[in-house]
Structure formats: C-alpha cells, structure tokens
Length: 460
Image (cartoon, rainbow, N blue to C red):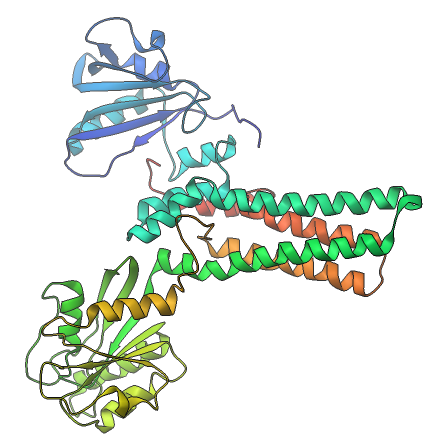
C-alpha cells in the first residue's frame, strides 16, 4: 500500500482519562515536531526541531506566556514511527486538568483533534500494518483474558497476515500456471495441469477450512460465551455465581425465590471469558414479579450458548428440575449436581438419559469448580488451536471472506469436472485471491474501513 503524505497533523490524549502519574498527548503528521516545538521550552540545549529521532527532551509546555506543565517530549521522525509520519509525544502529569491543558495548547498551535482510531488508520493507510493487524490493536486493548490477549498479539505480529499471504501466493502460482499453458498450448499437458490444479486447490481449501474452524475460538475469546445459570429456587444458583466470581455478588438466603431479576456478570474462567447470567428460579408461582423473572429465565435459556443447569443433589428430582433439564435439549449444557456437602440423594447415574456432562459440585465449599472449568474448555476450545502459535481469526468479516474464497475454489473443481475452458478457472482463482485480499485490507470499501476504525479510542 502506498505511503500517504497528504494528511494534516492530528493530536489526541493517548492515555486513559483520570488521575495518573503520566499523561501522554500524541501528535502525528508533517508538522508534529514543529507544533510541539512551538510550545516547548527545553530546560537545556536546543529545541525539538534539532533533536535526533527517537530521543526525549525535558522541559516545560508554555502557551501564551504561561507555563502549562513540566514535560518530557519524544521526537520520532518518519517513516520509523507508529503512523509512518512525524510523531511527537508529550509526557506530562497525568491529572485530567494538566493533560487537557496540554492538548488544548497543541490544538491551538495548529493540530486538529484526531478521530477515533485515526492514528492506527494512518498506520494502515501508510502500509505499516495491514487490516488484520489494525484490528488486532483494538483487540489487545479490549482483551479480557490472557488467552484473548495472546490471540490478539499473534495477529498483531502478523501471524494471520502471513497465513493469508501464503494462501494467496499458492493461488497466484496456480493462476500463472494456467495462463502459461493457455499462451503456449503446444507445451500443455491438460490432464497433468488439471490434476495439479485440483491438488493445489484442495490443499488451499483445507487450510482455509482450518482458519474457518478456528474462527469460533476467536469469537469466543473476543466476545465471551453467553452462559445462563438455570435451576429451581434454592438449589444454589446464586451461591455458584458468587463462588465463580469469588465475591458476594448475589444475595443468598434459604428463602426460595430470592432472585427475582436477572444478574449479569463477566468472568474470566481459566482464560475463557464467560458472560454469566444468574436467573430467577424456575417454578410455578402466583407472585407477579417472580413470574416475570421466571419467564425471563426461560427466554435467556433459549438464547444461551451454554446452560449451567443446577440440580440439588440432596433431594429427589422435581417437576421443576425436569422442566429445566428439558431446556438443555439441543443446547450446549452442563448439569451441576450441587450441595454434595450434604447427604446425597441424586448421582450422575440418575441423569444418564440426558445428553450432557454431569459434574458434582459444592458451591458452598467451592469444590468441583476446576472440573467445571475443564469441561467448558473442552466444549468450546477443543485444544487443537494454540492461540499464541496459530493464526486465529478475530472478526466475522474475515470469516465471511474466507467462506467466499472457499466457494470460489470449489467452483474451480466444478469447472474442471465440467470440462469448461481454462479461462473459467482463472476467473474463479482470481475471485478467491481477491476475497482473501479483503482480509488484509486490499479492495476493501472505504465505509468498511471507517467502521472498523470508529470502534477505536481517540488516542489510538
């Protein structure tokens, strides 16, 4: 992608809002160093315009004759910067008043406020990173678990980009082979050519399939698993929620029907993000408010990606228990036999007719939670994908492009089997090549690019 030079100079606060030891105002563009120099008074030595690249200078930010704050200013000259433009970063005190005063001085000296994600967008448009790496930046920032961070860092390092480049190179080689044979038919062994193309297409398709299969892992690590805790009143749902969160988030009493509304919490369970929903106990009730809570419980169960069905192992199965178990049909679900610290009435054998894993737990004593974590990992992360070593897709847009590329490659096989002319093959191969290019940012419409970067924070 060409190096873009016609951008104006932008600035934004690059650190989180609030009090802190350091606040950073980032400036990027042709006039970045000039603008920073115009409001900076070094404690000693020459101004910023004469400083070497990638150095820091101590001094003060002074605007309209007033000292705004002490500062360390970094000078970084293009093209060896994040945006491939001139960049200055003013490191001042981290209080809200100080950092906004510095930003105000920068803006009044010739810069304009950056749009969300504009620094990273410039890095993309200037060819320093591709679109998968740009998207990985925000994924690293928003990562809620170590696993999601590792997957995002792998994309940021170019692991997905490299895999896509390999696939496109193979497709390009096949296309060139066909075109050579079309130009020099006297040297063409059609059978050999078609068999070679078939083999190559199947190899590329298999690798695309692996990337598509890993897309669900990427989605889970990025968005979390919508998990609903179901059970009749007083079986220990809220105790389970508190044990998983390691805090008293839900009210726990011996009075059935305490939980009437929905409690939602996010949880990092062994690197897997869960979006937990603790529901009202499912039972027949005349209480209007509780009845509304029960209906919401059934609704969330239908929408859940994972159901944790809590059953009291110290009492026989009830009609409410059976209704709850019915809600697990056709869903990913785990049956949790709770209250194993009491005298047992139920065991896993009593629930063998249900196509679910059955685990013994005691939410009160916090036992069985490691087995629950292991079972969830097995259900959603098969273990076949090493997120720090393999290319894991992080966006639905990428998955859609992979599916379209796969379809084009399948068309190549159909074209060969149908005995159609060779130029039909090049059309389908070119389509596949283009669809894969969409993933790294080639031939992507401007509105899609704008939408991606609009999700970033201002200073990134």
